[in-house]
Image (cartoon, rainbow, N blue to C red; front, side, top):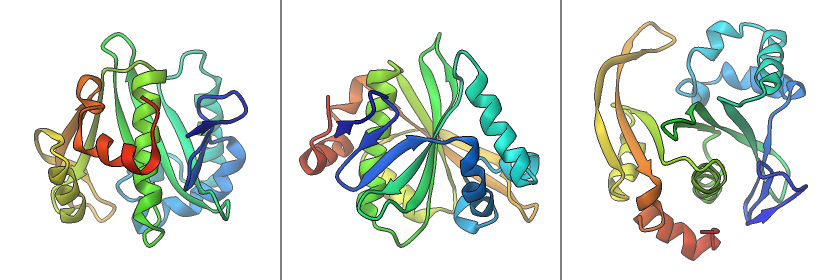
Amino acid sequence: MQLIENNPLFYAGRSVIIRTINPDDAALLYPWMQEKFFSFYKPYLKKICSTESLLAERIQMLASFEKAFEIEALVLHRASKTPIGLISISNIDTFNRKAEFSLAFHRGLGTRCIAETLGLLFHYAFFTLQLNKLYFYVGADNSRILKMVQHFDIVQEGKLHKEMMSDTGEWIDMYRFCILREGWTRSLLFNKLQRIYELLK
């Protein structure tokens, strides 16, 4: 993993490049918000940012805060420089050193890009932001992701009933999982990513 431009949010990995988003990215991200792959990534965004200009204003507003409580970054396929996904660290609680993370990727673009992105995201959260805990949510009907999470023995904190409403007005149950800094470098997921990508500890 290589830092570029002396900015800890700019990473160049083997498969991906990660950079912070800016208002000009609204032209790319607004159409993404209409697609199915994006539906579980901050579902409220589609409602509060009903136009491209509102999305650009939101990005500008978040960037203007002196103390970040939400960080979003664009993921690009390194070889082609094609944008392929979006990641976020939000609800940053600096006192309790915890935050929520989310991601959305176009399907069919390879699991290696997603795996490397996760490794870079966790590294940044635990060792740059000095967070102690990252938590995330998975839809109860998302068997593919649930199977992966269970394979890596990621801690399940509970099941939340009717936690989120879909675009069609259907209530969705969600599972909440967490990853702790103290267990990250000993986890099955880290060890797998370390062998493949040589992540920084």
